[in-house]
Length: 385
Image 1 (cartoon, one colour):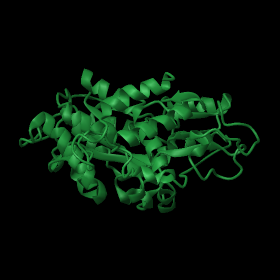
Image 2 (tube, rainbow, N blue to C red; image 1 turned 60 degrees about the horizontal axis):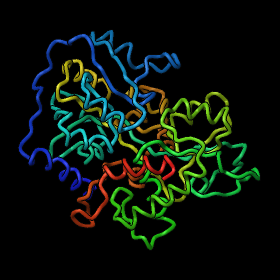
Image 3 (cartoon, rainbow, N blue to C red; image 1 turned 90 degrees about the vertical axis):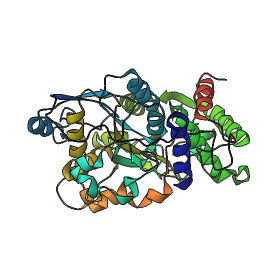
Image 4 (cartoon, helix red, strand yellow; image 1 turned 90 degrees about the horizontal axis):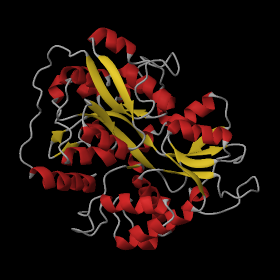
């Protein structure tokens, strides 16, 4: 956490010089009639996918704010949309949130205007992916691990290692994994390769998958090039990935609990696991555009997003962990203590949460490979270079 906080401060300093920053909104006025949100798939449901999962309709009725959602499948897409403007809120992961702060795309949040702030998990209230120099730039929403999703007919026992998607091998059904696995279509996937190497090549000295010197970074890219020869598709659309598992012979991939839960709900032979190497993960924050056209509806939504029943039902729907711990046990929604445990509530310290790589890292100034190189080099890996 200390390292990530230093990284956050370094990023903000490049833009603001760390001058005092105050929340723009000091009081909530009359609702504007709508709020426009960029969100991950499955994060804002109004009962259209499954009737019982709806945390939008009653909010619209009570607030007078119509909720308009633009789905984004990667953090880079979210950053691009927020740079374009026209949106009020975004559910940003840690590899996007600090870029949005540094780029002056989001504004500080006045937590005094969010009555339910006190119910937020203490581990998230000042998390370094949304809090910079003591200033809050968002409201915690959900968090969870990136899991290894697999076909249970091919794997009668859960895979114990991520090697099934990184190294060519014969799977338990006697067939090669080549052409039957997938990888995430986003530069942050470099961190998954780095985490795998942390376990299997400790001599590289990797201490964080987001802080890589040139040697460590080269090793990660080399592993990703091996994976390139195995991969049938680089996925970023959750529903296309689900179709690939159902109809295109894909049997293993990094994924989100969202896809796992939907496929299992359809009766598909699907399960997930966090292998021995551990997992990267995401802690998502609702952040407000610096020029939000609908700030009053935005604050009303951010407060609503912390409602225990919403947090509980979203936790069940997405297979994630609520930012409000009481949502696991208070019975206001569908979630239970056992369900939160199954979603990894007790594994918070084991997850290496997405964050934006910068050159100024704990190994020394300008030692680590910055994110812009992750972007360009990963495009090269996908293209076979």
